[in-house]
Image (cartoon, rainbow over all chains, first blue to last red; front, side):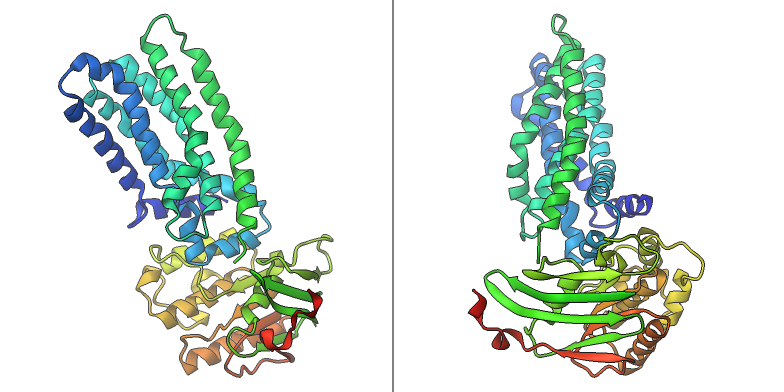
Length: 219
Length: 213
């Protein structure tokens, strides 16, 4: 299983892996907002956490469709399905590798983008923390979509659309926790804990759903 | 040790590809599937490997010392049309991955370098898999069978893209696997000189009418 994790990580940083593509897309989305909105610093710092979160959500969706598709194209998926390891565990490891390769760079890039949006230190810290907790949920949800669309050529957009409704709660609680950290009356912990709960819930449901979908993709 | 297929039928979409195929193989025996394109050879191999759900029938794998109810797929190596190797990783990394992932770190199993030597490509371990020619890629994919121990080898046209020399090497390796008590099931268009070979001619859809449905 460690072998699978290491292999997927290596692939995500090598040519065509797409780990950097996600970060670049994230930067592009967030960096154009100040140009579009105009140099109103108060407005930018007010919408900052939401924009960073939306940017992270979109970039997370961008890389999802490749999660199983590359393995299917070169035949590795067949062999992975045949092994004695429980398939849900294999999928969990692949999700983990995918998050380390595609999700974690987004979290690391977010403070820089927070500066673009004139966010305060507390807001930047809160956004980074909520992203750290929330992006794994996006990967686990996305795994199900990626597994369902694995046999479809150019299924990328379909995966995003399938996954988006389930990803909305992650966005809502992520953004509200980030705002709660800077706006005084609202408490930070309740939305943050719900975000943690969502991630843990999908960490269980996601791999099982994806494993079921992969088993039934007969070809 | 015995692999049994009972009354296997499979369909692709609406079409019934084959029906009521049964065979039984003991250790050291091989099965060669022949037949024209589209006659269902690959479908049968994928069904035995557990990658396609059979329409009817079942595949049973019995082995001394292994727990009952083990899926036949877990005892199989499957070499399909695609090589299951990552073009961005080196040959060494690819083979290492399958060696560890298939869970065979025991002594007696060929090391990666040894397996590459067996298929006649000892000097290519450091190259990315994508740089190799089609024939070399096929040979390295075959080396994957040597780095992890599986009793059953399911090979879908293993000699595609190979020159005659490499073909002989592969046939020797298959025969050695048979002598060591393994089972080989292969689909082929070229005659393969395998030991203890049963031949199963796939007739394809022409021989299977829809009377059951």
